[in-house]
Structure formats: C-alpha cells, structure tokens
Image (cartoon, rainbow, N blue to C red; front, side, top):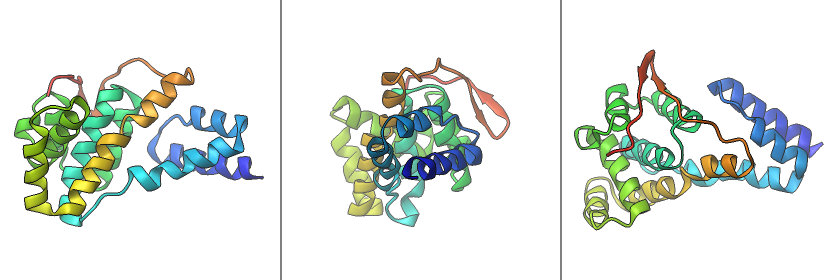
Length: 180
C-alpha cells in the first residue's frame, strides 16, 4: 500500500513538471523504507527562507544542481523557479555562465558554487546575503547549496543518469555553460 501511494505521488510530481520519475518509482519498488526517505527530501531541499530572498534561493538551487547535472534535473529546477516567478533572464544568465550579471539569482548561484568548491569568496557572499535578507536566507541558500546535487548523484548511482542536454527556458533553448 505504501509503495503504491509513493509511486502515485512520484507520478503526479513527474506529470506536473514533465519529469521522468522512473528512478523514484524504482526506489519505491525496491524498498518502501527507501521510498519514504526519498519522499522526505523536499522537506529539506525546499526550505526557501524569507519571501524576499526567493530569487537568491532559486539561484542557489540552480548552482548546486548544475554542479551535479546538466540535463533533466537542471530543467526541473528551471521549471520550478519559473513557476515561482524567478525572472527567466536571470536564470538564463546563470546557465550561460554569467552569474555576476544575474542579480539576486546570480548571488545565490555564486553562493552555492562557492560553498561546493570551498571558495574563499563564500564568506563575502554569505555576509552579503545575511545583511540584505537575514539569517534565515543564509540557511535557505545553504540548504539549497547542499541539496541540489542529491538527486543527480542519486540518479547516476542507480543507473538512471542521463547525458547532458540543453535547457528550455520558456521556449528558448539554452546551451548550458559550466563556467560561472
């Protein structure tokens, strides 16, 4: 029964975002316990912090996810960000390696990439986010920076990884750059 409910939830999610949830269904089929744990990950990854920091959070999710994937997971994050009202041009700039020009979205993107790389720039980015948006925003972008790679790495580990692809941003096909 649990497996059926999990798979139905995964399928609804996949239909909503045109996202292949085959790996999620595989997990639920293999272990209800693992499926339940997977279903709890959004409670962690989707902590977005204050409303005025949503673009920073979305940039951090994109930066982290792009570090782990350049295909379906990045497309999912872009679609979710657009649904949340994140400006398409700012997302596009980040995807094209122009995060410095992407405002708050770029700030979050750069934060995630600096956190992942343990870059010395991280401290200054953290201080900027905290001074502009507060401590809860720093927590949200830290959650995003650490969680965006979970799904792509999990998919690859299970044999469901896909090759890199172009990302569609509201009808415009973007070739992803891994340079920020």
